[in-house]
Image 1 (cartoon, rainbow, N blue to C red):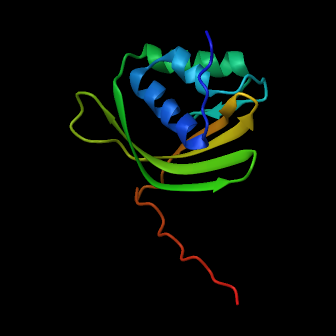
Image 2: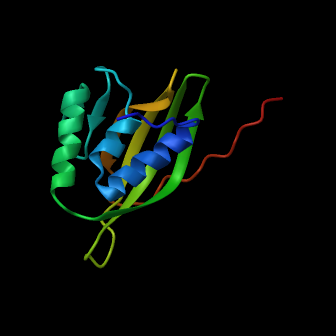
Image 3: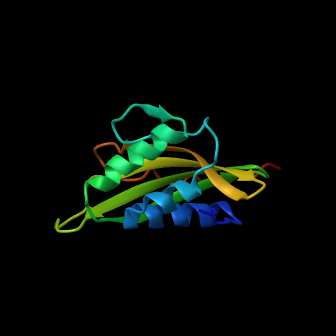
Length: 143
């Protein structure tokens, strides 16, 4: 299968959440870099490293058959020429449940490769009990 080309890290991130929503393992793995140094941490889980183990973790999640919907809030990005780090609050709704679960804070790291931007790390953790994103800090101006 030929991997999609993601011209921006935002394109890769959109593809990541679309694959997650559709429980599409091939589309999910198309977002990830072809590198055994990739890693993933699912909420309350251990760190999973390497392509085969990351793939298997997503296969198991998708095998549950749950239909998930994501609403991303309070996105923050730090981007350089070769690396982009995104922090988001994921508000997840499972089909058939009346309301969303407690939010998850995710950090997604993308690397620019010769074949476009690819995910190299995904780390998701339950948000604090308040569930509210921290207030945005004002930009500082230096004189």
